[in-house]
Length: 205
Image (cartoon, rainbow, N blue to C red):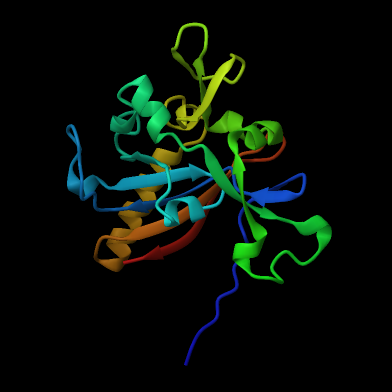
């Protein structure tokens, strides 16, 4: 026997595309702790757009929910450019046609950070390596190379991602009696009239 689960896709519409502000995976056991992190404190991977970026092992941001400002992959400007995500996945809505008729692979498109900036979704996760002084600025108002740092979320707490992940990992570990892995997506909105949302997509041992 086989069960079939139909889930609502998390995200929002940007012109002819649909994707969440960012997606991620979190695990309650960190196999590769650095600095003063502990293995039992967990680890998370997050990326702009759909979670396929993480599933495929492409560039994403790795951080500990307990220490969200420790980002060893960004130890220098050069390493930041090397390790920063520069493409993301979005669902092409096919101008109102059935976007799933030909399967997921033929309808997901790989977009660039320029597209996210045009959609006004990059401002929640992006920063700039300023061309004037080669310093990372946590604003898109400066000219320079766009990078994904999640500084608005992890440094300035515009969305309480780290706290939510800590709580869910703790609850999940208690409920299942073992370390867990979760998949999630987050929608952040440009309108103050709409509340940002955290979507728990999956939890498993």
